[in-house]
Amino acid sequence: MTLIKGLSYNFRGLKYGLKNPTLLMLGLARLLIILIFSLIAISLVLAKYQEITNLIWTQPESPWVLWLWHVVSWLLVLLLAALSSLFGFLLSQILFSIVIMDYMSRITERKASGKEAAPPSMPWIPYFLFLLKQEIPRAIIPIVITLGLMVLSWLTPFSPILTFLSPIAAGTFLAWDNTDLVPARRLVPFRNRFRFLREHLKFHVGFGLGFLIPGLNILLLSFAPVGATLFHVEVIDGVSQPPQPDNKQPAN
Image (cartoon, rainbow, N blue to C red; front, side, top):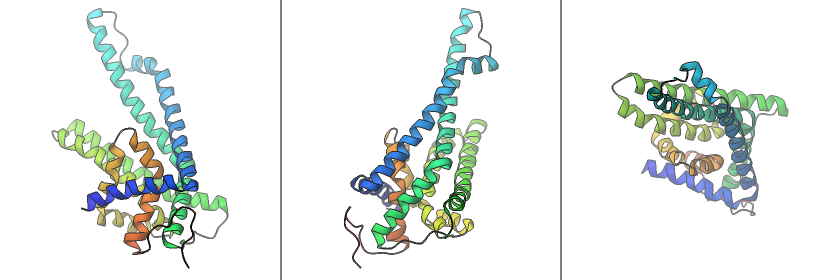
């Protein structure tokens, strides 16, 4: 049931975000930024893929081997495109999305609970650096673990199991990237926030399952801060008040 709850909160966040004009605008802005950075990174790879392939294996003259060279080159293109898309996502996340995600989370928290945990009292630039400091471990640790699982799947006989676990692990860490917004804003130490992931692992796995659906994953990811904040307010904080409609303020 915890897996189902995680998946349901992901879709609840999407539904709630689409109904709220401000959250809709922010979600679409984040979606556009992710797409732009990812497409730029992929385009750079596609423009240079033949040169990259020739660095690894020069195009053979024999027509009997040429077909294999084309297969290898396109497999390499697919791998580089996936890695460059991941790089584009991380770059957009670090440079822009952390501010948008935090703002979406603050709006959702205010509407769902009638109050908002005050962010650190500091000017905008130091606050941005504070958010950046929170984002770096959330971005680096998941990537290292996910890539480590991929490498182990190539080098060990456990390939079928690890190949299945790698995308689930990636989705779980993406879920934590969103559920961590509220405790990070409340200055909870990183060690405690990582323990929060372990204690609610099944929920995060369920929340991240939606990110494994091609096409839909980008849309869900854009509004994931909303669903993650709703979960934190309703389940962790124990606020029984349901989320307020779009243009109505919570009752005092």
